[in-house]
Image (cartoon, rainbow, N blue to C red; front, side):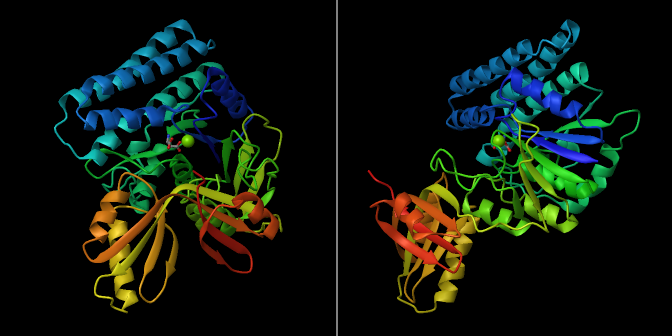
Length: 423
Ligand code: ASP
Ligand code: MG
């Protein structure tokens, strides 16, 4: 049995959905298809949640209706779906959107993350419903499975942790492959907590969902179909010489995604490693190309690989009492950042001062305020963190130009540089 995952960019248009159908039709194995929200739907739904949270209900409903129109247009573009099925599909879409409208108009729980889970999950529910109807009409018999019936999580609604044991128990019943069904369609990114409320696994989390399903079903492989030819040595928009990496080890892939390469969601590799399930990253547009093969036997050759994380903040903390007990101060400060769910991308320390590089997001300024309770805190924002594996001096100079380097860390194979942006 195989798992295919399709990201939002691959199914952003009717042509994309048809291409998904072509790929699915060529698979002769049993198959579970995991889909993200179509195109930029998740960004739109995040904007709905923000507007709702700012009590701007009209704006929230306006963006929601725009997202709805995009999906109705999508259905109209999928001409293989027969007219009676179209009517049924449109009414399913309407009722999914109606549930969110009802939530916006009636919910009394004003926890931002809870509302996020209930609103933003709509994207995956819409895309999987449409994709399932299309596959059934134009490709082969398929069955839609609601991921919330088996992906069981804690209640960190925006970046929920998955309970693997509970998920495994439920999953066995759901994907039974009986009654002539050999293709299931389900959602990435979403799950539900023990109360049955919808949770989300974090941005780009569909890769992680697919890896969990692959691992818990003991699949033969996971293929992530993307709008690039595979894993590239750098972002081609920043580095036009970027090359396709034909092979990577699990370790390389995990490190590169941690450093910010546009490879896959950071948590994707671990569930696969545990069961030694190969991961293929392949071109959605060019389905005959082999893409990148990631498994325990492969290894990154000596090609320089560059990952860039934009929009970073460097926070420097000096304990107020000038204590030299860096270990204690470090742990206390890390706990504060963990509470605000900030991921630390780089740490530099001296006996008196700890500097931590994190993403600039909604919680960053709140965390800085809390860090100020026990320490003198300074920060620089609008920074870029660049990591180069198998580095060469030329490459680093070429990219950094004459920008100021705030921190440089290097070992034999990897250099990491925190750069100021040019204003
Ligand atoms: N739709 C979600 C996002 O855009 C999850 C995913 O694409 O993997 O982040
Ligand atoms: Mg995506």
